Amino acid sequence: MRWQWYCGLLLLMTTTPAAAQPIRRSFQTTDGVTLSFLEAGSAHRNKPSIILVPGWLMPGRIWQNQLNDFSRTYHTLAFDPRGQGHSQVASSGYTAERRATDLHELLLQRSSVILIGWSLGGIEALQYIQMFGTARLAGLVLVDSSVGEEPAPGSSGGFKDNLRRDRDKTLREFMRAIFARPRPKKEITELVRSAKRMPLEDSLALLDYPFERTHWRNIVRSFEKPLLYVVTPQYEEQATNLKKNRPTTQVELFKDAGHALFVDQPQRFNALIEKFAARLS
Image (cartoon, rainbow, N blue to C red; front, side, top):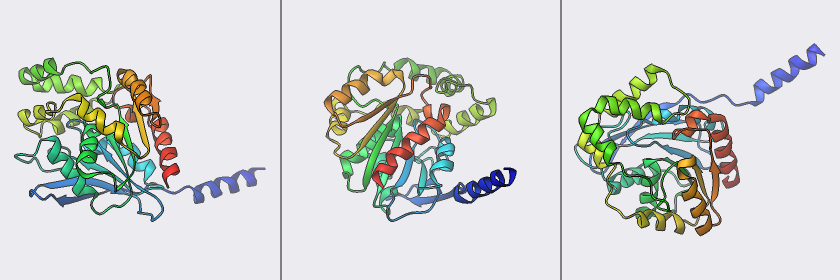
């Protein structure tokens, strides 16, 4: 019996792919800015690549758990948008149009992509679709991001005022609040340090894209490829309304997670994405 157990363990060890070590790479945009991303896993002709886009001021490495898991099966990239993570802090380009163009230039060498955008990254993924179409996309995943459905989220005016008064304190509170489960103090400190690389006024510009909410709603409703909308309770009503207006949308609710739900509940999130990706392979 012990020998059979040992053989079974050996078989499991030899058939479960190891996580690929992420490699940091970069490219230069058409406006001369150097942007960075983490890359892991091998490209497969019959499988899409997975590209992960973080939220406001966040580094791509916040997707580390997803890089580790997905790269066992899929070619996976975690992007640092301009001014974030290891990407260059440019003097301009903090608009929805330019950041969507950055995404477009990242995707140029890839023909089949599952684009996963979290929070602001979801909004920028929609702008990418509006400007450049869906030819390179196998599917889209929007993670806890407003999609222009009702009800509208609360105003960010007070948050912006707090950032101007005491940026350090406000960023620390923000970083703690996006997780339902407390994160190590060192991790929060590093997220704040990384966020402060971008000048304050440029970071505030990212919260003030000059579009009506119907702009985002129209893009997502007209998206014709598979769409997974993963939300916490703050966007549950928007998800319900999107499902009514776009019945093919797959909606998943993470009731007990924070805004960074893929960090709070990585096993559930990763299994959900891998199931979604398997259907598109």
